Length: 150
Image (cartoon, rainbow, N blue to C red; front, side):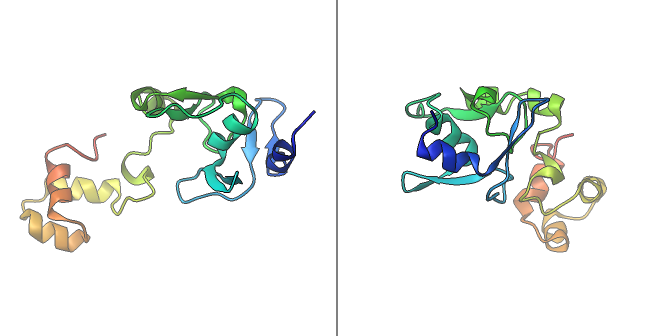
């Protein structure tokens, strides 16, 4: 028998019968993850799912919740597991196309074409920073291949 919290949570879910994902249809934040209010606190919906459906009693400090299906909007507790940051953000993100590097990052101010232009330019970092409206440190990171790595 479903609890009242489970019933309320499931009102914001569409279940995909073929792949098993539960797609979150409620509030979505800027990061692409759902939001859900539970016990007077706003949780990311996939994290709330683990609590509401009793997969975890409490979150392990220092661990993240990862999606085995690699879908940010999936809230199926069977597709969610606690993982270390390196497990959650490791090579599978590149393999599955869910990596948020470069212009896929929701905070990105540049695109790959601009990054290529910065790398090929002979202009000083401060000039390029003004031109592209980013910091000189950002330009330095791009030129030294610390950021925007293909």
